[in-house]
Length: 153
Ligand code: CA
Image 1 (cartoon, protein in one colour):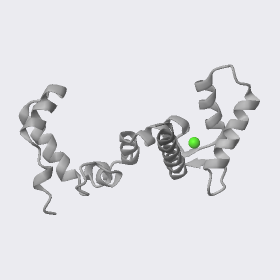
Image 2 (cartoon, protein in one colour; image 1 turned 135 degrees about the horizontal axis):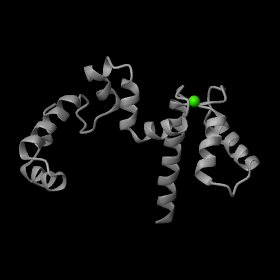
Image 3 (tube, protein in one colour; image 1 turned 180 degrees about the vertical axis):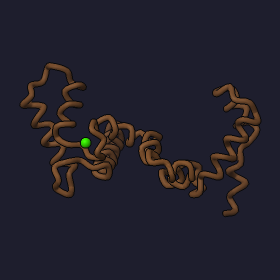
Image 4 (cartoon, helix red, strand yellow; image 1 turned 120 degrees about the vertical axis):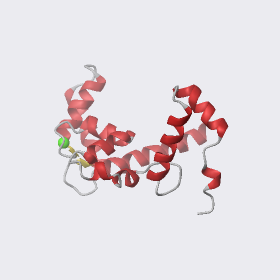
């Protein structure tokens, strides 16, 4: 509260967005106010929860999938979850790994990569990677990357 004014769209921002997107002034201000009405956390970003409050998505049976598609981690998860049961099995991991690495790695090596990945990610012991387990792995990777960047500089 109270910081509302500082988050208002400034003329110079509008000009910049106009140049970048080709949208008109009124389109940008309309989109901005729509964005603001969706951003209940008022942190300048739309979270998963903000999306879930959109009534049209809340009643849509595919709502969760649509929301996930907006988030990079959701997109990556869908890439692996080939049968769309919201879990990544060892088989699915193997299939995607095989597509990514091509033919230079043997099935045995791929199998042990898949096993190791599942072992590391699977916290509830069902031998699959759920979406929340997947997110945790990504967060860990992110932290490790940030740390390695810090060491490099
Ligand atoms: Ca699956």
